[in-house]
Length: 102
Image (tube, rainbow, N blue to C red):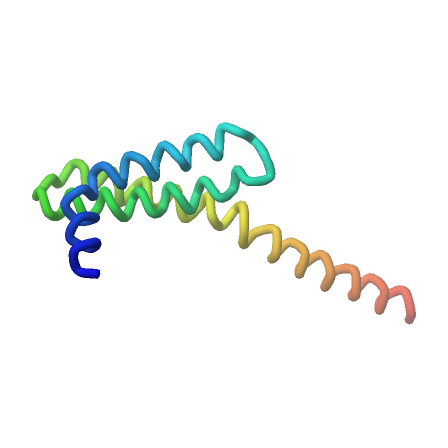
């Protein structure tokens, strides 16, 4: 198991690149699977942050911290916001029904 972890850490830049390409491909397909591209981007950002810390590369670190924020925003908009919107719509609908009963 440690050998696998060591191989991943040695090649973390390649992993970050491949994950970013997968995320970009998924978003570009504009399909029902596109939202999962944000997960790949977040994993890629994590890989690049590890790489930039290991290589002491501050500009790359800063850029990927920014990309992490955009990835989190994308995840929120695709996965969390629709659930919150449905909850709010349901509450508003209940209030309207209750209001009409009086």
